[in-house]
Amino acid sequence: MARDLNKVMLIGRLGQDPEIRYTQDGTPVATLSVATSSPIKRGDSWEEETEWHRVVAWRRLAEIAGEYMNKGTLVYVEGRLKTRSWEDRDGNKRWTTEIVARDIFMLGGRGERASAGASADDLGPPPEPPLEDDVPF
Image 1 (cartoon, helix red, strand yellow):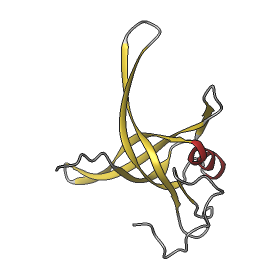
Image 2 (image 1 turned 90 degrees about the vertical axis):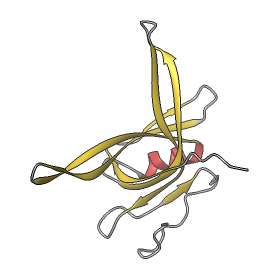
Image 3 (image 1 turned 90 degrees about the horizontal axis):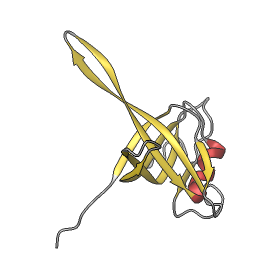
Image 4 (image 1 turned 135 degrees about the vertical axis):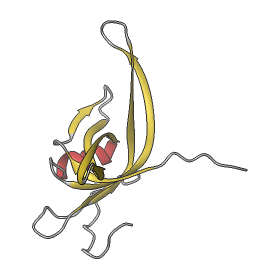
């Protein structure tokens, strides 16, 4: 039997500090803006083309993002695509597609903030930073 798959993996930089909000029942939710760049040839020269991704993290993963990540942080994000719709103040129907994060890992070398990782399954304190050679992919 065939199975469906909805999986996204990104490595990019945060374009701004994570925005942390809380639902009415106090559940934390973080919104991250992640930029990924790809080389593209235009004429005789190569340029970087940047794509922006909206990432949403919930519960402990949201708290860790707000505590340890900031603008410019290099991150690995794994999650699933979700499209939702709503009506704006004028009654127009709007849609957005976002990545619901399952795992987020801070990447980086020496001189940057210490690497830390988090998973949606992680209900305890943030895990120990991985070793420089211990890349998750």
